[in-house]
Length: 152
Image (tube, rainbow, N blue to C red; front, top):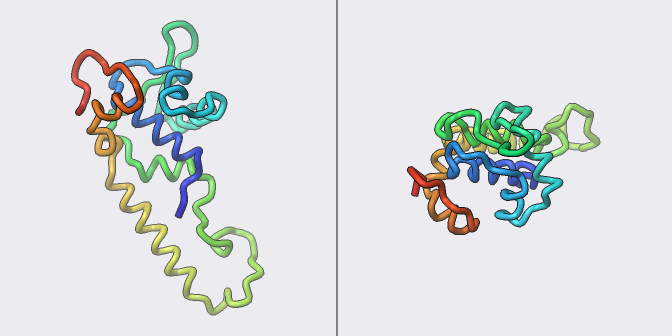
């Protein structure tokens, strides 16, 4: 299974915000740190805001912050919100399929189980879990860590 760049970038934004703790981060700073398109990153941030995962404030002194503490954000929930198509194969979708073996196929059930196991595993992982190495992440991203309490 492969996640879209939209979801990948969303997870990166959330990790960036988690290691910045309560400090506002700007879209340009995050785009520069990750080497991503600012235009695309703004769309990702908008999706995260619509999902109530981040708060955005426009204008001078504005930026993006997490809406919930990192330990309350589950990676599986983020993937479900940002991925528009978790259908691994054509027959998972709502449309009729042109597959000749669909009426007798057992592969669909196996793939469905694999997808559910993938999401269930990610449901056990919090944003805090994947951001505990905050100092290392900040160093790799060239980000000045907050003065106090950066997880490391």
